[in-house]
Length: 290
Image 1 (spheres, rainbow, N blue to C red):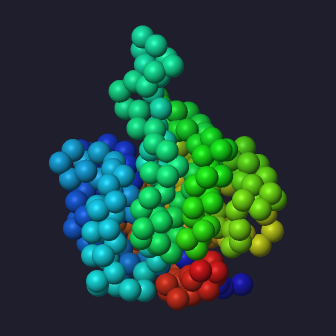
Image 2 (cartoon, rainbow, N blue to C red):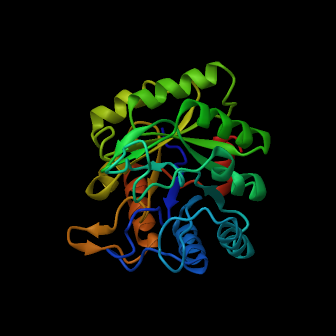
């Protein structure tokens, strides 16, 4: 049956992508403008990281988050804002002493990683539900840190978007739900194709979908060339869609995406071609339970 499908746009991320595609926004003004354009193209949710404007590197600066959110809300009060808590989880072992952090490590406390959530109280914030090798680094989210972050998120009334990169992350999430550490509504993001998590395949998405708790709403995405095939697969399987320059820099083979809005427009075409309408922000709030 036809149903409203929510599109989330992941606007910038934290990888070294501005050097690879000049459309990746960096400053609060650029990030906000790109988010607003994505919303105008059909995204009900915009997923926000911030970057140091001088270095383009990921940042935990509260004032950068505040400026970005204020700029979005000044022009569009309806779009659902989803702020990341993923920054501050990278660990690289030191070459001489692996017990000491090497270059690239940005491990931060749960308090620092959720400071902007407590201050700004967005509609949604991401919560990465486990540790994994990610490229050549370790993406470190211990159960204790996740419990501490979940407590802050729940206390300020923000809906956590539970990002799961492999099946074990769902097992941990389900355990935290059963222990009352994660309250309803339960919103999942199935992340596929990230080295070295689950591959971006139909089989992986089906497997992970069937592990989710009853009644959960879920999104899925694939990175790079898998972005649009996984968007279509998520719709067919009853989920919602995430696209954006965080996950994919290309609109087609050899064609750099000119904007986040262009990626959202392609997702809109896919969803409508399968036979579903695009959810408005108001419909998305009702579906998720915000």
